[in-house]
Image 1 (cartoon, rainbow, N blue to C red):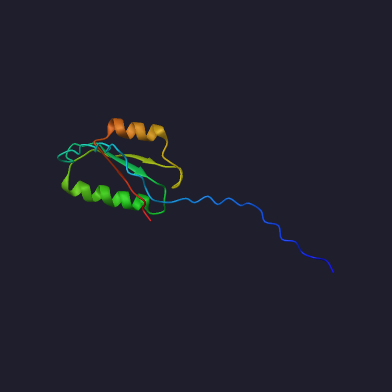
Image 2 (cartoon, rainbow, N blue to C red):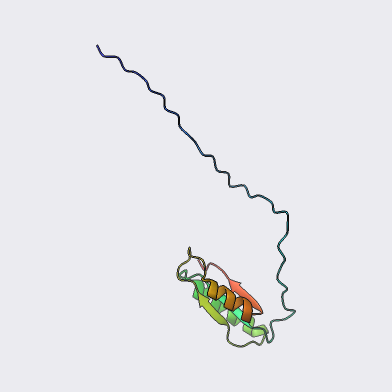
Length: 104
């Protein structure tokens, strides 16, 4: 009769916690314009199926109350991929306010 021997191996378990750590410094908030009249509006779409519809409705709604030129619109290549630095730099440099969202 053969005997079975148990072998114990050392296993490592890495425990990850989703709890956010607090920062010591608070990031500054952008200064919003008092009005959108004459503002340069930026739109950063995420390329989800309804994001273009969402932003078209937003621009139309804002246009009923404010007067501004055609918005600067940039669309990410894919929802999970971050926006290119060039898009972010351009929108930050040229726009008074930038809208972004998911459009699901």
